[in-house]
Image (cartoon, rainbow, N blue to C red; front, side):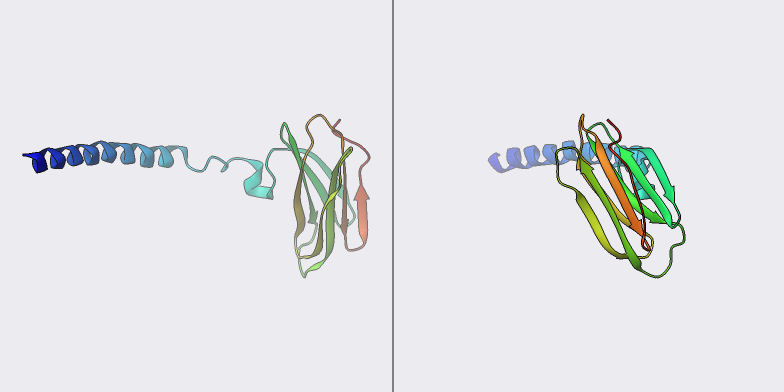
Length: 136
């Protein structure tokens, strides 16, 4: 009798776990990837596009959420790896830099900038573009 009660109790747990697993699977199918529609899917940065600053060899793209700012430098003509860099600095903080040889883009770099101005710069093929203090 004792073994039978334990077996029934174990079957009850399995029976309760099965609908829960189905519910979680259905929720995953319905909702999909929560970030699928965000800017991150296309750029590597979260948030909404805030500024696009163009220059001769590419663009400096800035994205913003409530607390964070993200930047990346994108080449106009992707191709062979070449020197690129992107820098982002919040007022009163240190600059975050991604520098190297890239084919398409440098970055993303992200900083915490809640209620602070930021300064961004990008360099591609020896040409550069910088902002003053923006997004204040």
